[in-house]
Image 1 (cartoon, rainbow, N blue to C red):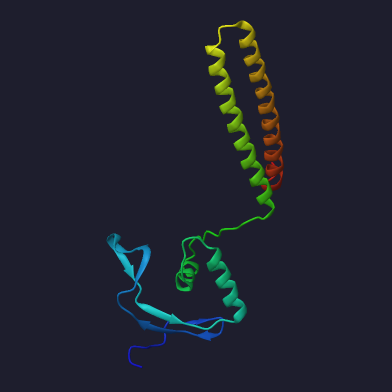
Image 2 (cartoon, one colour):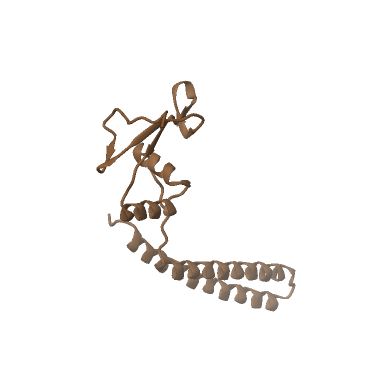
Length: 165
């Protein structure tokens, strides 16, 4: 067991003993030391946790963005670094689907308006131009209804997710 030593700085977490060992070649990513050089991780810590705490850490690891191992997660926690956690709200699935549908419908309406406008400018008869103008007016009415629906959805989302001011 040469190379193993007990830490001298009190080394106990939650009543479990820690063992530290000098290690070479492992680098702490993203942590810069003196003169911008990457700081080497020279001590290894081994500890045990309860099954419940392990599940909590594993869940946090799965939900965290950019952290790939328990070791990296624990280093971030020990260094008091910000951990970005991804969450998914199932209640938003239907809302997002509807917003996507409205976007497609507005794109379709815009395409139709462009096509009718082109035909309008190619027409020489005033009566035919009037028909195209009425078609565009109807499409603008559809656009107004879609925008109104969007405003209602955005209002509901803001009431749910934004703090009241």
